[in-house]
Length: 123
Image (cartoon, rainbow, N blue to C red; front, top):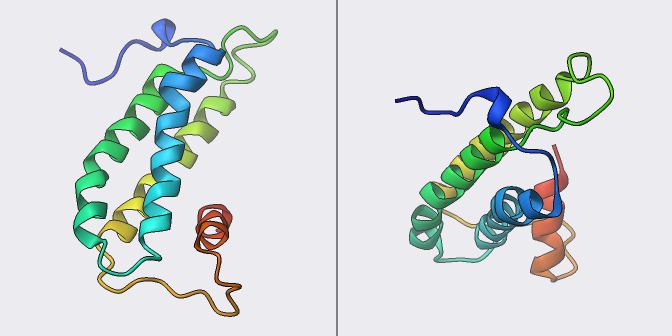
C-alpha cells in the first residue's frame, strides 16, 4: 500500500478537481487565518488542523498541473511549485493552529475578513 498514487494517475486541472481537490484546502487555509485573528478560537483551529492537512495532502497528490500541456516533461516544475506551496501552507496552518494569543494587525481598519486575506497572501 502506498501513501500516494502513481504520478501517471493524477488528474488534470479541471473544474471538478478545482472544486473537490483545490478549493477545500484553500478555503480551510483562509478559515484558519480568520480564526487566528479572533480571540478564544484555539480549540477550533486545532480541530480544523487535521482536516486542512488532509485537504492539502489530497491537493498535492491528486492534481497534475503539467498534465495535458504541450511539453509535460519540461513543465513538471509546475508540480514542484504546487508541492512547495502546499508545504508552505501546511507549515503556516500548523503554526496558526497552536498560536495561543490572536494576531493583531498594525494599522488595521477593523475588518477581520480583509486582515485574514492579507495574512494568507503575505509571505
